[in-house]
Image 1 (cartoon, helix red, strand yellow):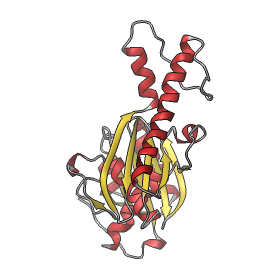
Image 2 (tube, helix red, strand yellow):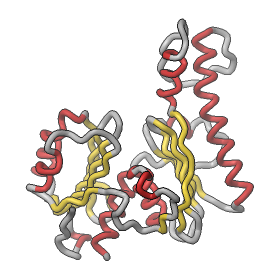
Image 3 (cartoon, one colour):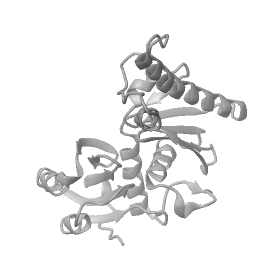
Length: 254
């Protein structure tokens, strides 16, 4: 499935690729330092990865895929780098106690790896606000039991439109209306404020169980949400990519 090169990884360049539901994110790390990041559509996979390989001395790569793969993606990468394709059997730097580990999304695995590497011996709640909103918790003993999945912001807007006869399809607005004094404002208020209340509520639930924990917010809607949440959080837009790099380094250490 994958090949390892040298253990002198701090002097080598890692290529990290995250194939999401809509776009591909790619990053280059030197050790644990991010030196390059790009986002592009799936049809540009070959051109973009070839460009990255020409710009950087890539030694190995890791790929996470929650969607359909670009055509011939693995052969394109294997020709140039040693490739680790993340799956449910990949060695990770935390104790995976999920009751159905083979169904656990690789994006959630990467996020928990990021939590384990960057916040050892801490209680960490990671919220990934993307197509779906995922909530995953790693306790101070490095144990992962699971979390929750709910519809993301764009998905909620689409549901309001598609599941009704006359309500319009809207896009998020920069500011949440204080009062839904029109149909459009009512939808904005319902969708956006609903997400905010959900996140604050889930954080409050964890606060009942754990005296101290740190919340990491990542994903495409992280910046917008961080400005509207009442609770203290750390917005880290590159957290999943950092987690993937952590898994790659962890496998080199084994």
